[in-house]
Image 1 (cartoon, rainbow, N blue to C red):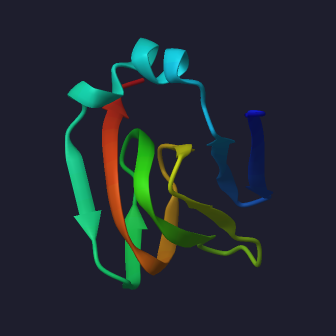
Image 2: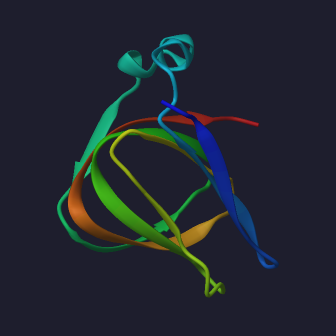
Image 3: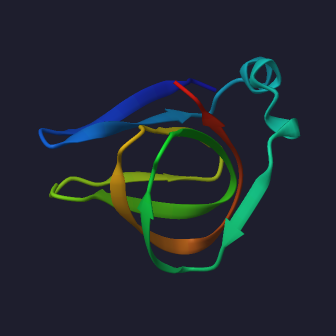
Length: 106
């Protein structure tokens, strides 16, 4: 499967990076299976990132709307997503989320 990344930029906020279908070797290299897990049901959730967070989505479907932007990032099952430190956004979860996550200290 092809891997591709895309970012959502807005002048006022750092960008969300979405990597679609990362390879098994990349996931193994990152040590995804040892990361903590988190999940949530469908709904709308305000989220603020005090540190950079990388997530691997096992299931779910989300649109994230960065504060002060008209753009949104869409991601879900099979995506590796990086949220930058300082980002505030609203998650609009249409399919319940189950993910592995890790915080990266700068």
